[in-house]
Image 1 (cartoon, one colour):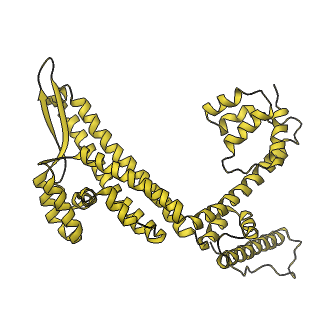
Image 2 (spheres, helix red, strand yellow; image 1 turned 60 degrees about the vertical axis):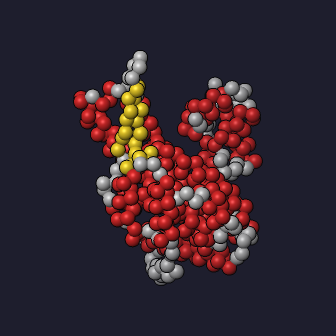
Image 3 (cartoon, one colour; image 1 turned 90 degrees about the horizontal axis):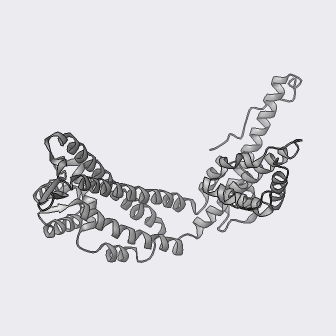
Length: 375
């Protein structure tokens, strides 16, 4: 956000006794001061090196949250911080999408176990479950592709973590599974016939027992890969065909994604640790600046509320409002402590104050508020 440096402020020759003119002049002055402070702090951030000097961090802390975030775009840690946040979301989406796919397949398997699912009257139910699994497959394949984009093409491009390629090769291997899963996104987008179907096998004995699996037919996958060859690099297409060649005639979707999910979890666990060890100095300093801004805002808010409440003849009873700030489990833990005790108040603060903003002054005001609470 940028603020104009010229505000067209009312001239002193104006009749400032007019309420409207006086108000316009005051607003203009405040806006001008805010703009000036914004530009000064931004220039200081751009000129400073990491770690940011304490005086600059203090000035950032006193800004409103919108201005602070805008100014901190000039911080050396911003680009990696922003990309890392997107990468974390991408991994969470991948995990959710993969789990949803596996759960949908397992749910189908569970319903099919006694054999009644395949009766004529449940045909619509089977169709709906097949469509659900196809949707989840589409989401999981896209999430896997997005995760590669965020980790390799965005975060690693800036972080340059050592031995990235070697760990990628070591964990994902050379069997082509990684390339096959990533290629599925393209094949599913462009070849609508590439849809998993279910296979089932009935075992007779004391009772019917049916086992099912959702599979790609190998011949369909080969046709899809060849039809989309132009969308892959030569090396990727070679790995994809290596995987398909070694695969059985029916490629089990659940087994593919269970294996891929395990490998992805191992790789991204390593990558997260490597990022924190090798590339997070600037990011930690960026987080420090944001944290101080949040702390100052919280301190201002709680000093205002507590100071105001303690001037009332009868302050609000904090016990009546615990559910606004605490979970039921946390409330139970708080209420097991002696009522109005410093220990109890400290526990409430520990639960609420996730940013460590509480000062001694705020804590003493909280003790007083709880002490004056009506029985």
